[in-house]
Length: 136
Image (cartoon, rainbow, N blue to C red; front, side):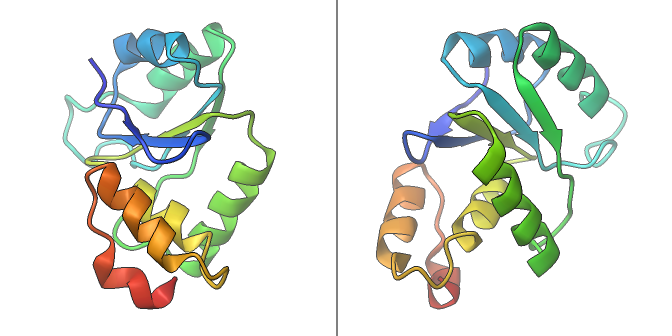
């Protein structure tokens, strides 16, 4: 069962999901899944992006792969913003633990004067973004 963590009404994150989790994600009302985890990062038993994409698309969900490792680069943040702007909502993004997803999401809001709200929303979802507060 997927560990879905709501951040806002339009965005949630989760640790690694599998094909079976996609049905739960669709039933919860999500319209888009973003994969931020590269294939093989967790070894050969990690579910592949293509398998999760196939299941998501078979259920009518939009699926976008934006895999990256480590901290999101400015290009990744820009791409994440573009995806979030155009994707049917609500959106669920996943990676190994959800941390890189929520970090990329938070950085899409940088400079908008909502640093405290972003850090608080992340904390409510179980993620500590206090170390990047100054970037928001």
